[in-house]
Image: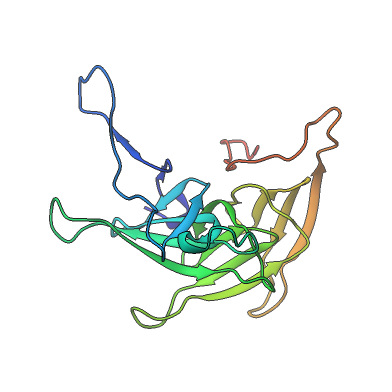
Amino acid sequence: MPMDRIARLLVPAILSVAAGAACAQESVIYSFLNPDDASTPKGSLILDGSGNLYGTSYYGYYGDINDATSGTVFEVSPPSAAGGKWTEQVLWSAASNQLRNPVGNVIFDANGNLYGSATGVFELSPPSAAGGTWTETTLTSNEDSLGGLVFDSQGNLYGTSEYFFELSPPSSTGGDWTDQDLFTFDSETTGMAAVGDLIFDSKGNV
């Protein structure tokens, strides 16, 4: 399955429905209550091919919940044996001089890089060796994004802030992404503060 079509799941719990069951059964697989945990997850989750879940938290570590100038991207991994505990790892933590307060989902590209939105749009590149540090690249700081992102078939990113915007990838490696505002939410007739994830239909509408 292509990485940009990975199944989306809901925070904070996964609902499983047995065939023919009259109602859903909820099972909390992880609670963000440890001092080193991400705090206040807000967006949906994505799943990789190994069963790991990825998401964002609006604030930083649970032990530092009053630090509003932060936020994280985290990974929650399944147990190695049935009945074991899921484990959480913070892949990236924002600082006061960086992007902060991520919201919405993150998404993968075909190379395993993660993209997300905060007080700008960012890319996280995985480490070259297991256990290494993910590398953050700010694609634009012009959009105070409020929701998740989506790729089109050409590799352009779309998201929402006070605008509906498009980010087009550079023509050469290391170049700048091009930011274009496609639609303005004017608060009076078209609403404001659009939040949530975006999807395409078969005709290319978002």
